[in-house]
Length: 137
Image 1 (cartoon, rainbow, N blue to C red):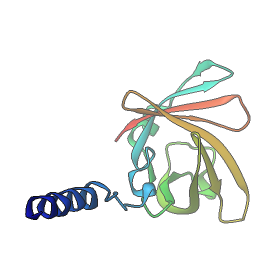
Image 2: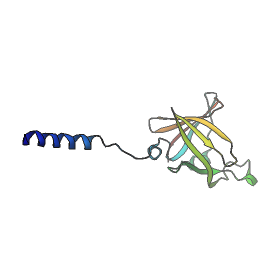
Image 3: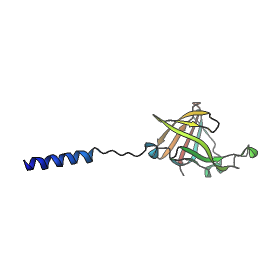
Image 4: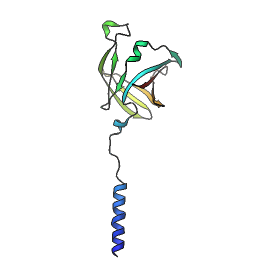
């Protein structure tokens, strides 16, 4: 009888420890989190030129579901090489199935499809025309 109790305790302990799950927030392990630099741009599947100065700029998807990166200040447009770093106030949400909703500070929302190809991150814009490929920065 002692052997049966010991076996029962052992089995119950094994089940208890093996049934524990990882309670980490899934957004902290999201594929988009990190700093990404644009290395390719496509319009209607046709490659577009990436300006050499923009290769030093990056977009950062943070684990707190915000986006930071570089923008062109309004007074310097259209000079694309005169960009500044800004915590943009954009909020991202993983909707599942590679769909991400981005909410701009003015309330405008859009959904992009984002997925990994090797180490690179691909973003397909909702217009169905524009596609960006990012590498880790």
